Image 1 (cartoon, rainbow, N blue to C red):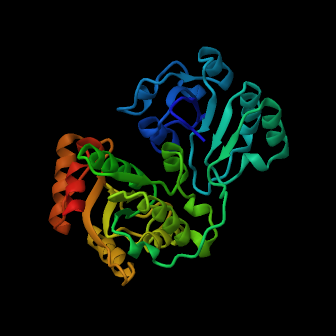
Image 2 (cartoon, helix red, strand yellow):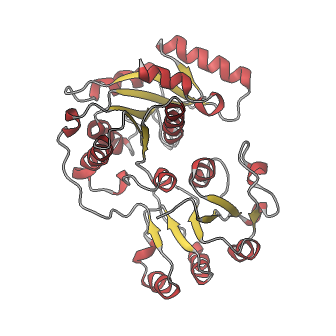
Length: 347
């Protein structure tokens, strides 16, 4: 639904920041479109780089109307948050109506579908703009049946100790490093932000349980038939998280990965919003490898660390500690590129 020609305003009213607007930050870093503005009245007059380090200097406006008046070429409003549960904030609906009246197409990654609201859908039709509800499945999916065994393409899945710790980012950095090395590689999106960035994928957490594994299998079969040599699959959730383990296992079994990169947020002691303690990286390595399918036993070959906000020396110490604990290569691919972890995948 998006192309490199689109000009995007990101809507994150009262929410822009590294923790509260994961979709916004991810799209600014990796999206294929030009970002011409962000809406968050708290930071009006500032830029994205003032709020989140290493982001470009995208201007922040107080309202959609202000952003559109400053950038009349803007043609898309992208909802920039990804809260737990994926519910659309009802107080944002008036702003969505104003955006459509301003001839902005709407990209929404939440579980509440704007195209299912008659008033919103009717207004969009009248103004001749599209609504892309990213998580809304648009076709029927098969049941997984290990059909990927018939293709030589190498598959790497990012898995995590927890949710929202950078599995998408690691997969994107690995894809970038592989492309720079001349590998015919691709990124496979499985969540709303990844789908916005790449333009396609499977909204794995919005698919009925019986068909989640089949959906990712089908998406990988599509690229395998295009003779890609390696695919990097965006992981979701965590195998030990009581709320998110279902999508994690579906991706593990449906994608039939050869290799896994274990992602971890430095300093995190408990799984998000739970009392489940993260005992060790080794604990997660053992679980992930043990529950992979006997048809193709996956191996964890590297550790992707998220050390956002930490100094270079702190990052180096944590990388060394992870390597000492696991005996595997570790790195923060955002700070240091994905080359080290890519080399682990190619061995």
